[in-house]
Amino acid sequence: MADLTVENLSLRFGGLTVLNDVSFAVEPGELLALIGPNGAGKTSVFNCISGIYCGVGNIRLRNTNLMGRPPHEIARLGVARTFQHGELFGDMSVLENLLTGRHARIRTNPIAEMLFLPSVRRAEVMHRQAVERIIDVVDLERYRHAPVGALPFGVQKIVGFARALALEPSVMLLDEPSAGLNREEREDLARFILRIKHELKMTIIWIEHDMQMIADLADRIHVLDYGRTIAEGAPDDVLNDPNVLTAYLGTTTESAGG
Image (cartoon, rainbow, N blue to C red; front, side, top):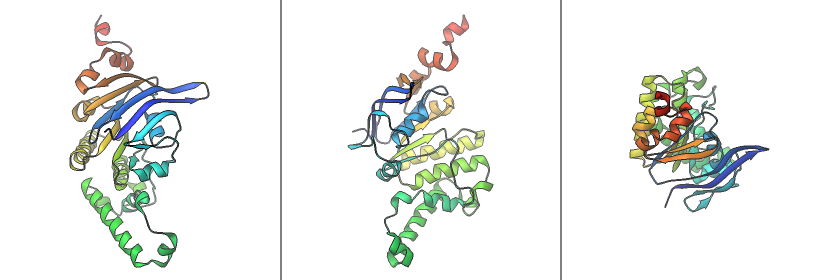
């Protein structure tokens, strides 16, 4: 059974069609790259999956229907995402930002928290231990107590990635995590993605514009153009598909040579 299934997803804003009958499924532990030119509808797919937008169609997390559910409930079911611009709390430390990613795992009630009962103290220790493990996975130890707003942009992107991991999701949505990173930072990010894929067996849907990273890391690629699916399959096949080349370059390689 697929971990996440999107069936006949359409999204419209007034007379503008953003997504038109998009369908795909992601298998457990698979890394599916969702690519396409700017404005193809990739982030809109993520917004529908995570409950920010409400489209028409079906989105299922295994046997659970996600359509119409609010974002916090979808997060609690095990879907985490990153954002293109981080969306972090700049005045808070790296550790504190990662702890906010544990919100869906908090089971204590406000009265117990106000009295700081033993159950609350035990839960706090458990959440901090979980966050420390993630800090170790993504090599953020030296920045643990640094205010996020004072960190370089590349480090902030890794913090956003780590915060999504803090949810302990079963499905991770990565929205252009390498945008704005230098070569060394991209190599670190690729290592982290492979680590969570292989060690945690995590299912990942990844929006990315770096085609070399896609070719190296993705198990399968799904391509959108103007809100429609134009190709899907193995990286080598898709990245050489004439329709994909036309969408990105405006012409196929063959016609460009003529």
